[in-house]
Length: 199
Image 1 (cartoon, rainbow, N blue to C red):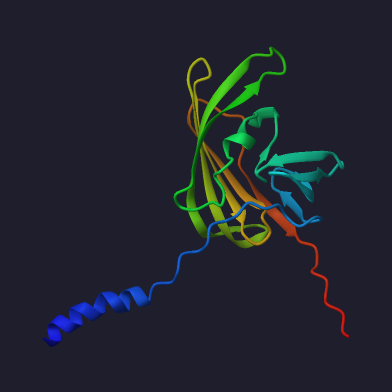
Image 2: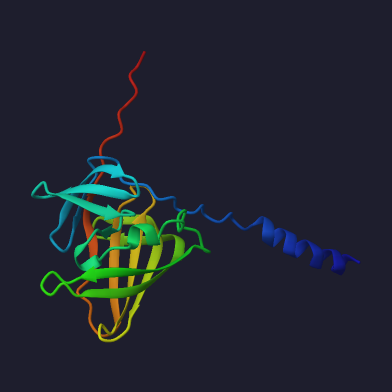
């Protein structure tokens, strides 16, 4: 009888010792005036949120628009990410996204399609960059394009859950080449929180 009770209590004790899973990361933009510097020489300062995009100013004070806070609109990144990721957030273990992004060559005007899939690798993971150590949500973007644009690559984003800044991105080419590059934050400056006045 004692042995039976022991076997019954072990799973209960094990369950009681488990911590609750971290909450999903809900998309949001950094607080205005948050400044991040990257090892690819970029320096951008958060300005405001515009729908499901974050607006930054670069070092030349030129406005940059990052859809879902991660992907700069147009250029090499293409378009289609804004609508394609609608419904993906909050980013939970079961979150998935699938759509086709398009890039139009500035020289020839040829349109290239990039079938894209997203998933959440980790809801909470510690990551260290030259800017410090962060508790991040890790998102994975997989791209598989067919000939004549024969490419397959994986992009991973580490998003700091406190500042909502992408503190690291890696790009891994599995087939063909991609012009997208990896980067990581070398400095992250958040605006000071106002101290409540004493009455």
